[in-house]
Image 1: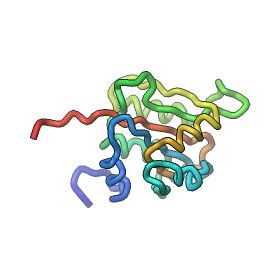
Image 2 (image 1 turned 180 degrees about the vertical axis):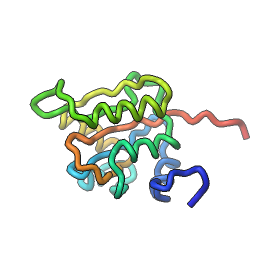
Image 3 (image 1 turned 30 degrees about the horizontal axis):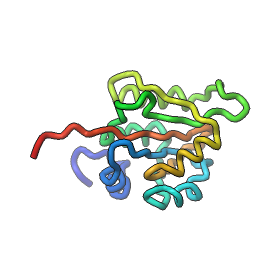
Image 4 (image 1 turned 90 degrees about the horizontal axis):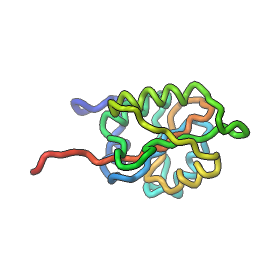
Amino acid sequence: MLKGIDQRLSAEIVHVLMLMGHGDDLVICDVNHPAATIAAETTYGRLIDMAGCDIPTAAKAILTLMPLDSFVPAPVSRMQMVGNPEGQVPIFARMQTVVDQAEGRPVTIEALERFDFYAAAKRAFAIIRTADSGPYGCFILKKGVVDLAEL
């Protein structure tokens, strides 16, 4: 363990977050998402499990280390409900609260059609699968720039 890093974040997750650059995408999903299949096509190339966490808890921990991209209109994407594109499930509002609090500002979350979401997920840097049972617990977070002091 290290000081200041949420204990839910494994060494592999911290390593992946460090490898990612600004503009790279990170998928956080529930157990129903075809994560292993899609993860094989990501930059990282394999699935990362974050067992014991629901999606908001995982996102909150990740966002303590990773800022969201402030240069794009919607740094977070989610999957639309199939057959009801305007439909809502509780996880949508819960994630909205998490990302707004993490960034200290309102964050736009865009909705993608199911197969558009899958295509975007395949272009992501990595996929983290949580223990969340869903439904529609599929989110893509775009990494922003970390403001660092000069060396």
